[in-house]
Image (cartoon, rainbow, N blue to C red; front, side):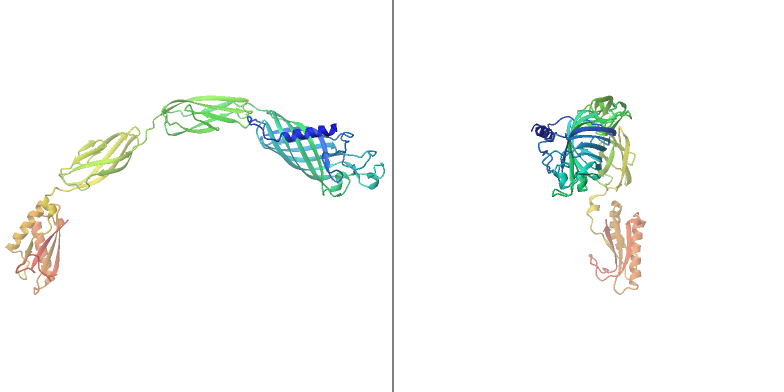
Length: 510
């Protein structure tokens, strides 16, 4: 009974370790290193001769079911490793054949060699893990026969046959330091062919035999932690602008044991991790930026600092638009100019294109002469000068009559004649006075002929040209006049008279 209690305690301890543990600090178990894992424990067998790993028929220690082994491998990362494992042990029930007597001293030692992959499930001081692998095994066993099973010591034939199969198990790793761990582990090898391990073909258990062990052991890393030392810290050499991202970089000795953890502090209450960090200062001022690097689970560390000066940013000025209160003013109307400008405030300078200038965010100007002018705005701030232009057309001032005029006098002609009569000249003189007073007013001159007149189209053309020439000869620019002959008139003008069809109309155009 005492033997069974000891086995139960070992198994319970292993299982208890898999229960949830309280939070603890992260630890560094090493990586990129060769390791060795010696182990010792208790073997168990499940197969055709034994159906339970814990039933030893009360004779567990008649032949002690020891298990010895060692694993040599490589730790790729703190979590992943791959190793070659050798184990040997005594499996007390492997060729017992359920005999009622212990007269026969059955051979029960077995060995195995396998490739094992392991995955650590946590980086805490107590970390569970699982493992799996493939391998081969061997050892001497008795071939089952009724006479050998009777326990008389006769009829037993030994065999020495190789087995192969897969392994699976789990365990707990207890961190000691970066180079050493203590572990509890349980696992099992599923072996085939069925009779190679226990000398007995399928007896209703399965087509496999299971050789397992509960073990304890130590893991030793050959590569110890090389302390980290910061070798350089790159900070901005010039004053930086608030609101602009700034990049900081640090480096450490090449032989430092990885992983190396970096922590940056920027002097404004914020922090960042990584060998390179980017930070944006939101306020102007002087800051002390620090970086610390650590490895070996925080056992080793190194730190450096630098000073950073931050100023309010100078944003380039950009003129996004320009506006005038009137794009076609006359020579007596004041124009107010304004603009939309982004960036840091600066000095505004206006050039109105006629030799006059102004300053400020808006400026007012009255042009004395008609014409087309290029207005230029320059904005200068701490980042430099930017400018933009716009074009404005100024027209001469006009009296109210020029804006309100809707019709002008018609000139009437004698039959079959294109010569302007005295009466016609008087009518055209009134039109001329208006045209000279209203330089922005254009006209369309339309000539007409009456029914019965010879060559009506030619006659209407001549009459229109005669009126146009009258205006030009008296100071009206030809560019303000469009003349055309309209041919024979089908209706009279608004002014009734004897010559209502023989006329030229002057029509105001804007």
